Image (cartoon, rainbow, N blue to C red; front, side, top):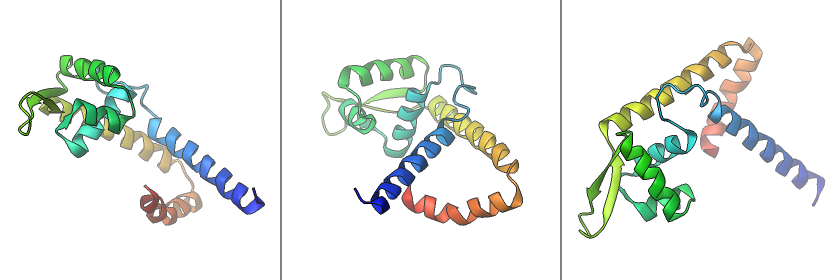
Length: 142
């Protein structure tokens, strides 16, 4: 591996780790009872692509069918999602967010944004300017 490629790979790794830490910051301080990172991720996927069959949700999350089944059961018990008949195949079921699921997801996202805003406010003017200039690039990478 050449030095330039090694440097790019190292840079990409550092960026991925930093982005992950930013994304997870505050998840331990739950604004919604019963919310975990895996449940939050499932709700976010459903918010973007609902309704989904269980197999589709498992594929999007990169987990097995039994694991997604347990996850959906927990989210349904908490009232965060609901099962609906599949219009294309009445033997199948799809899952979608309930109003409580939408509210819970919004609360967690708002909480995370607030925590990040506090951290950004602690930056000096130069650091904030660098971050603002980098934002369009980060959005393109997302």
